Amino acid sequence: MKELELSVIVPAYNEALRLENSLLKMINFFKQRRMDAEIIVVDDGSRDQTAEVARKCLGSFPGEIIRHPRNQGKGAAVKTGMLRGRARYLLFSDADLSTPIEEVDRMIGYMRSGYEVVLGSRALDRSKVEIRQNILRETMGRIYNRIAQFLVFNSIKDSQCGFKCFSRRAAQDLFRAQKIMGFSFDAEIVYLTQKKGYRLLEMPVVWRNSPQSTLSIVWDPLWMFLDLLRIRWLHRNDV
Image (tube, rainbow, N blue to C red; front, side, top):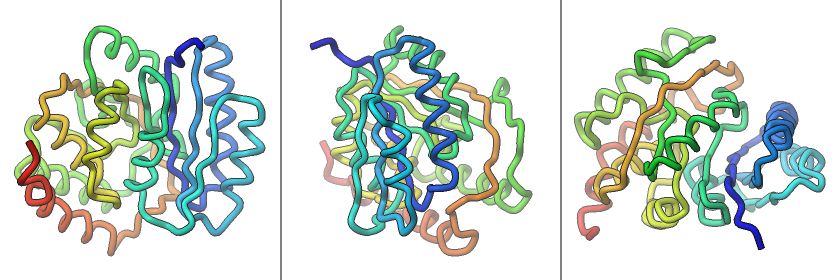
């Protein structure tokens, strides 16, 4: 059986209104490229019709819908999908496609050249942010990443962009070790990538803010900052 080139993991929580457009764009892109790909939608305990929309869109396209019986967090949804993916490369993408799926072409090029983890970034000189967040969210994001750079990892300018690609070997290793199930899982994965010595690249991407964010402006940032304090402690005994 021919090996798939790409597994796309889409974490989804109450995304029935946005998911159809994103999945159809992905499917059309992969068909046009004749790329051997699968799409894995992880429904993280949604209360709407997320799973039904995903099933209708995928149709006969390779992939599956995995349902968590209750909401466990974005990190949990990504972990489930990453450990299920079968392809040579595994990408996780936010359900709103804030980063266009076309950016995966360059990511795979870097992966083929020897990188094992490629992070989409909104914060590099050549990044192109076409629709910005409101000033409060943007400022909080910058503060969060500065603290993350101080506490958790080195030299990475944007750990939170929801567009990251991994070799299957790296994905299996990193996501098995993942312990944070909320929004700060990205910072934990970057920390583990550097700690375990995987060849890592931060790549500038196009990014367009989607206003219907599921991130609470009060409680989620608080938990995310607290999680930053926990990451090194959680992995203090890792080899």
